[in-house]
Length: 271
Ligand SMILES: Nc1ncnc2c1ncn2[C@@H]1O[C@H](COP(=O)(O)OP(=O)(O)O)[C@@H](O)[C@H]1O
Ligand SMILES: [Mg+2]
Ligand SMILES: [Zn+2]
Image (cartoon, rainbow, N blue to C red):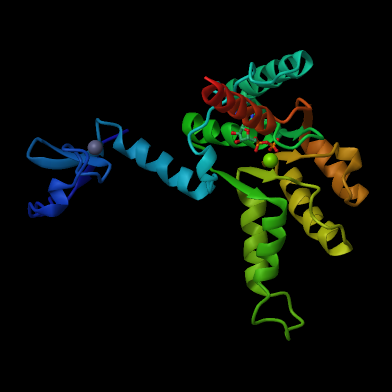
């Protein structure tokens, strides 16, 4: 990054602020100063603090659930599924998602997302969707956001409070919708669990049509195939256009892991 000429700032008083700093070079500001030809310039901290700061802000914005915070596609296990077909499918899914990340610069131009689905709950869909978001933030420093279909609808409803008597659409609903429409990578977890209604159709249509037109990436997870979603045909056809269906194993890792834990425990008790 090119150096920027700056007015000399009075140096910070030393004290708790400085003692608590993680980085001795930039004191956690992300910028370091240097003197050249009698002028003071600043440049990005040579410890990479500015990049770390940007990533950490993006991760905070992403609202990834705590449980999934630092997961990657590589750490997605495929040998924990007990059935052979499930393991093979998990391998295929992992390869596809790994390639999705490595080819993301090209894919981003097309706006194509993924639709991760399986009938079985606990098969790893949310885990994988979140891992993809984590990697996009970390590798490409692109903003991503995690949300669920139900949360989107709840947040829209919560913007109504205090505006119930008004005939006009409250601005805050519009602002919220705009935010959801504009985020470069959006994970919508568990689409299809919401109760269907014309209102739900209208909201999803508005969000997804806008994201499709502006080629924003959307990654869905669901327990049903796109064609079985209880949403209006216009919404389903938007989803088909904007995301490639990826079938997950029909095996619950949650149950398999719980069974394994119980077996280990039993073995310990039997001796
Ligand atoms: N391939 C995997 N490797 C390791 N843990 C997994 C894997 N798939 C799922 N899990 C764990 O199993 C639990 C359920 O997974 P989740 O992604 O929430 O399932 P789904 O979204 O398909 O219902 C989570 O705690 C998750 O971390
Ligand atoms: Mg899930
Ligand atoms: Zn630094």
